Length: 415
Ligand SMILES: Cc1cc2nc3c(=O)[nH]c(=O)nc-3n(C[C@H](O)[C@H](O)[C@H](O)COP(=O)(O)OP(=O)(O)OC[C@H]3O[C@@H](n4cnc5c(N)ncnc54)[C@H](O)[C@@H]3O)c2cc1C
Image (cartoon, rainbow, N blue to C red; front, side, top):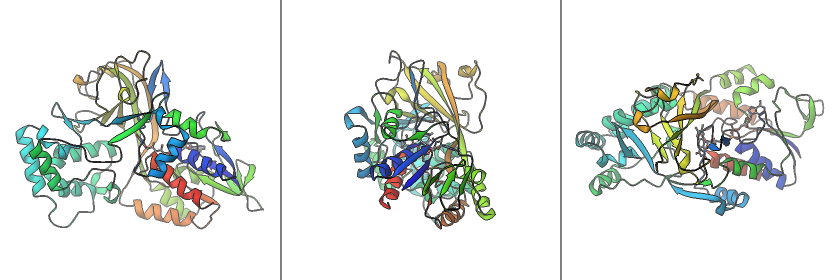
């Protein structure tokens, strides 16, 4: 078949690679000058920067891990144990918070344990804010869960559903929590990303480029118009014809480029997402991989330390290198930015801004209409098997790279 893939992010590249291997003729259309989508790396004056957040790889799906290592051999990756911390009342508490209560001051720890033991009574709430209190108890919810989630979603938590959390958040049992207190041994539960891989050289772009290798990718090509001709073939921007289109571009872009029923356009326009700025900065060396910052005193909710991902992250590899994240609309980053006290705690010794980037589409928000909207959209597109949706923004899913790859593998099986 002659197939057009829209978007050269991880999803588009994976499906393109798999279908090309099956003998199909694949053309990938990408509006940017390079491949990778959210999973990109660039070097700014020799400093490694994943502009849309440090992208580490791991998966509980063996077929995905095996496939990735068949593309970029395992010896080209650094294997790291996550050392994530939460900045709480001026201290660094291990992640996850609820299994690290022994690291809190005594009063806060007693509040948290007391409320957690009494939690999970009554009906399980269906909105995220109440659910956090119901599941973890008031103290853990108020000290950490609610403020952190308010910052990362920038959306009313009471208007979010709860089903998306399975597998995304550590959800320890009360017994696990009590054990961690008694043993005074905060141990990270086995979560998909508690250990991870990152390419030794070249950042996550090295993986992306390895997948892209050998594919026909038309860069700097923005999809403007998608239509069918008299032979029922797909035409893109008035050129060429395809038996099938696989779209990984964000759903809100489709109504601008193809004819869709008004009802489907309404569902698409009702999808919620948030946007993100990341700012690369130099700092003292640290062995922390990620730092979560729940306090509303600071605008940044998280710092990812790129210097812990690979030994080759800067011209001299001596100092630390972090990328802080801020949710919301884009904003100016002027010369005085590193001196601002409302971004990060001063003691994190934020030295110098090296680079920054904004992305419109960062996180899918699971609001109350999420299921209604995505199901209606999915059902509409399922009526024509020659137009398929795939990817984080193509299917509107909180998918990490491995799940994007898994979905591409499942789709490829149909061919
Ligand atoms: C802050 C952050 C941190 C993350 N960290 C991790 C992590 O550590 N590990 C992990 O596994 N996952 C991580 N993820 C998730 C990961 O980024 C995604 O799962 C994955 O990159 C999505 O790939 P995709 O191809 O589906 O979408 P995208 O990467 O968004 O790709 C879509 C592509 O379509 C192109 N496009 C858009 N519109 C058009 C158009 N009109 N015409 C042509 N092309 C177009 C875009 O330029 C882009 O290249 C993170 C995400 C965020 C936001």
